[in-house]
Image 1 (cartoon, rainbow, N blue to C red):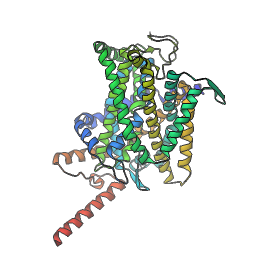
Image 2: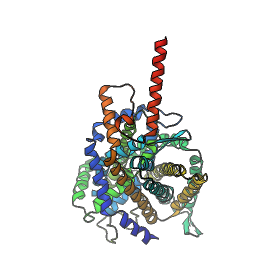
Image 3: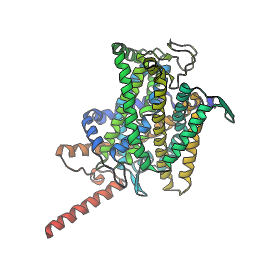
Image 4: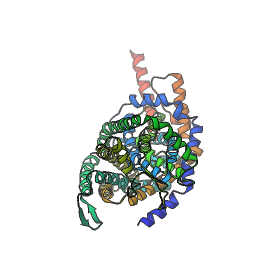
Length: 509
């Protein structure tokens, strides 16, 4: 099984995908005239001003749902793996992916808003929807939908729950073992898996509103607490910070772990963590209630900053500043850097736990375990939300009433398995899911751009209204030459009818 997973990852995560992720981000950054910099103040305004409706969640709730997908195990264990396999320079390439990826996040999330639909009283959308409507290729949309259901319903939840299990074992030990068809399992992991599945079932059977309400409370709190602890540790070693910066920059271009290792691991874990281009963020973006599609695109671009430039950087600085890491190139058995015992697992949360514990003795391991639980659990909720959106997409054509229930059962089973599984197998499966979705989505948004440029047209329209100082933004896709944006075409008709009714009432009075 491990050999099959490694072979598939070798094909999926070839240098071609790495260059595609970086190149696409740079391409859209130039075309949007660095929208992630120019509209930074507007991102903050939109984040705090949006409102929800009976059909859609607020911009902040959509951000929280998408952040719950972005801020997960990748921010703790993923950063550790990037450093452990690629050296400190991998952190630099994570930053590069985040900066350019913010433009990609704008494009894909704006597309999702433009081509969203209303179904059963709520908004639905995502890459499958905009691939079908903007590209006109339903077969390609189906491939993405099926790949996303498998990735977010099975493969990616395994990674998140695995991080929780490993972190708890680092705190409490294995608690003894129990024999099963999967071999000997640590009782600590079995108890954790049971607890997680019970809570998960309660929330996902409550629908998207319950997921949004849960994540909008938990995500900001957990991210803020994590960053505060990181700031405390960094401030206690502030004299070492310039040297850490230099090691990150130097190793990014002369990688200690071998040519391409820093870039490869930085991009791979950067994409896994911030998900820009992967096609997961657009699902939450489509569910938001906004006046103009570009607004949610800007909010989603900001989420990439929060994930990588804040949370991932916090993890990296804690690990590097306390020297709580080893570096061993993938496939090698020789350490290039060894600061810790050789049995410390590189692909797990141990580096981060040791880093915090080295400063705050007795606090580090349990704190990271708690943080990882919330990070990973909310990410699993986001994965369910994404998978369910794609089930809804398939149900538009083939009605299978039990499909949502089957998805819930499969996801809960995957979470249980992931909690008790070995880290190497879990991360390999997760990388397959991320890679396949990234290939399909990035190719899709590039083709859509060359066909009709909907997200660029929306940005230009939004910035025109900004300059005019309008009090309420409007979006007329027909006027902009955007086809098949059925939801917005209907909305603009309703707005015109309301305006006409108001004018008639005023004339009569």
